[in-house]
Length: 312
Image (cartoon, rainbow, N blue to C red; front, side, top):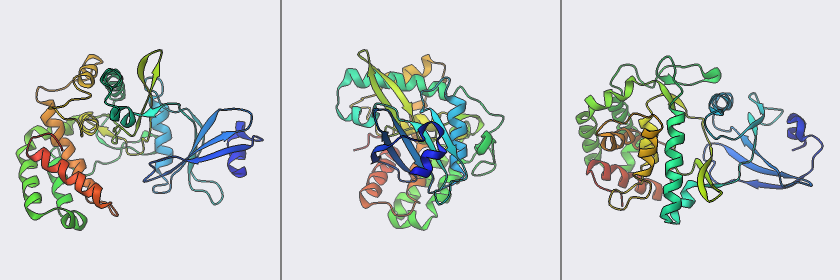
């Protein structure tokens, strides 16, 4: 910890009084660090999965910080330091993840926060790039996952061939997903034409909210390491993944705020974003070491999309 304090400049000489491993962190490790004689905290984020993600995430944070609430970057070591992997020191943001607020079922508060989140997502999508593709350090746009202008159905098919996917989903489900994806191919091809900033993990655990003078606002959007240039519909689908039309919580407040802030949504946007999110769900089933309850949850989300019903 002393080496990290020396690296962080303003933190040198301060004594650490509390160190807390933050929840989440499936891909990276995050600590909240508190110092002597103050309740001011920082977050120490180690990039243990992908070293290159450190520089990329910091560049994205600096790009969006003027229009999107994000943690302030205090120091970055993109190449690591000594025995430590790449890391970034960020100011700790007070608030709660939106998932916790959503679980309260307090509709007025959820509606306020959902509208603020919609406005924030429109601001994220206001950043454009010269072409579609994965982002790297310096915000350089690299290649997309697959060439062409109709990539989502082939990407889904590639997931269906994964050994992990085949052990977790039946052949019957795979066949239905394949047919569904290609049925939507024409509409999904429109998604490939956009070149806006996509968070790519825009869910209730990566959005922090807080009440300010009685109104719920976005405190920070975190975890930008998967960001790419593409269509904001990827983020819309991710955020609405668990929304139930029969018992709505964030709608129509979220989508109305998106469009009021300048985002364009097609007439069939609700069905289209579920078709887009099908690709993300299929990719999730290809990952290693997924707990059984997570697998069951993803399979249910896939089936609910195919059957055009609310997830259970």
